[in-house]
Image (cartoon, rainbow, N blue to C red; front, side, top):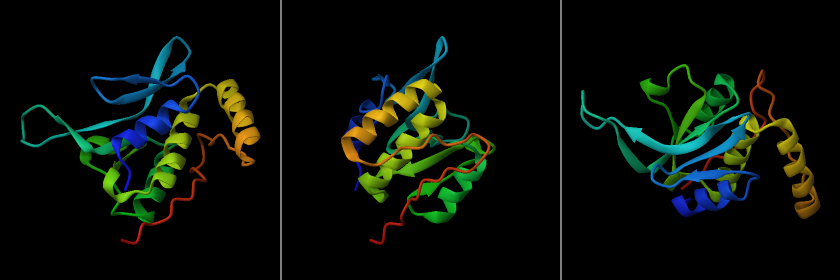
Length: 153
């Protein structure tokens, strides 16, 4: 369903996103640093050996642990977790199991969670002019309001 090219297209359409090409990761400015909101999953294939990139799975930062749990319960085929991410608000996404429209919502929320408020507001104004649909900045204290629909294939 979704591909790495879709991830790249969506992520780079968001304001001030930078791609880390060798690592397939996307970040947004946060003060003097950049914060990653989506990156290729580094899978532990063999115990006690280095993790290796799994290009079929994307790690995506969420607003909080409640938002993560909502996604995991909404579609356990597309979304999953592993011990490495336990207690961290990122969800793992099987790209072949998520629709591009849902991926767009997920990445936009992840970006808005970490981007400076002024940047999100400017991007939201541009999006409203272009699509007629408002974007909301997810609150860090509450679960994301993104509605991910379960793929039924």
